[in-house]
Amino acid sequence: MKATQDSQNAQVPYPGGFGTRRPYRVEDFPISPMLFYYEVTQACDLVCKHCRASAQPDPHPEELSTELARALLAQVATFPRPPSVVLTGGDPLKRPDIYSLIEYGTSLGLEMALTPSATPLATREALARAKEAGIRALGISLDGADAATHDGFRGWEGSFARTLEMLQAARELGIPVQVNTTVTRRNIHQIDAIAELLAQWGIAMWSVFFLVPVGRGVQEVRISPAEYEQVFARLWYHAQRQPYGIKTTEAPHYRRYVLQHGGHPLQPSPALAATASRSQGEAASTNVDSAGLSVGPASPTRNSPGPIGDVRSGTNRPPSRIHRAPLGVTDGKGVMFVSHIGEIYPAGFLPIPCGRFPQDSVVEVYQKHPLFLALRDPDRFKGKCGICEYRYVCGGSRARAYAVTGDPLESEPDCLFRPVPNRPPLRPEDFAPVAGRTSNGATQ
Image (cartoon, rainbow, N blue to C red; front, top):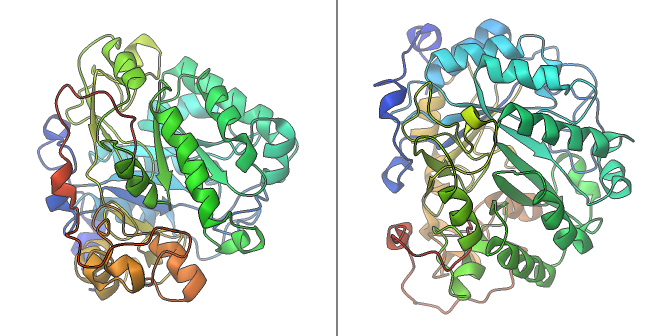
């Protein structure tokens, strides 16, 4: 799986250009990730209680250089269906060359997203510069409905206020936003309050993350499997009412919950569909992923709406057509992660090294590494996950299984569902969007 020198240095144009961008499909799972997370730095000025990266104030001495970072992006562009790239950290704004990396990735035809930390670096000017460089979406974290809860979680007094300032700036700049919230004992009682707060900010997607005990997260207390179901119930309630999409991260069993309650996971809620229908300008089709940031339009042009919102009208509301990504996206299956020093993982929360860039090709690792292949084969899962009828559309959190048991193929430890043996499995192909059906909430 060694990367050739040519592939490391290639200036690869986006195949067919932006105009032929198509939605991510089930048949892409074996050959291309939908989302490629690049942890550009470990440096961050926050001390978040759950931090996967155990971020530090200064960059790692072996952090990939600008030249190697550009080579990585060039290699990502060679996937058969190039993924959207999420530049994460640490705090990506701590990296001096971040804007040039955004520009370079954009020049390759890659759709670029950014997850800045809520620190004094995240000014309106910084977000405007990121947009000018080519950023198509932002991921902004909000872990409480009030300053006391959020700031206590993030380790910096003032983080809550800065987060709201970032949301306001993104709205003014017309940058689509996904808000990320980590559910723990600290904020489980605030799910409804956070949902209502977010309705004021015109966001595109709320991604609710369920704790995986890695990094600093090992010190946090996970909620119980029964409490997962309670949170799922509240998310399902809001998914049918709020004007933004709702998805879970590292809790794919929410898909099982939605299906059990008569939902169609690939259909927008009435509120979201109504918001989309009010979008002005040209129609845009949007991939809404089930593992990370919402990603860009299927057929964008320089003058078309942005990935989630209509940039021309200065809003970040949903586009007039919404395409949900296929069910089943999870760690190593539609998702790939490269660390600040080039380590290749199936996901940021599943830190099992499968190679290291530039010595190894990210394309070959994704397509051929034994762990990636195993993660994409739910019939190889162990325990109840291996016999569950929802294993192809859910499959459980492979990251949490690994963190708790040491085996990424073991059962999801935080799911209370008891599958019926020998029941035929549901598959992603069974859930194509149904035209005109809007009675169910938007979930992934």
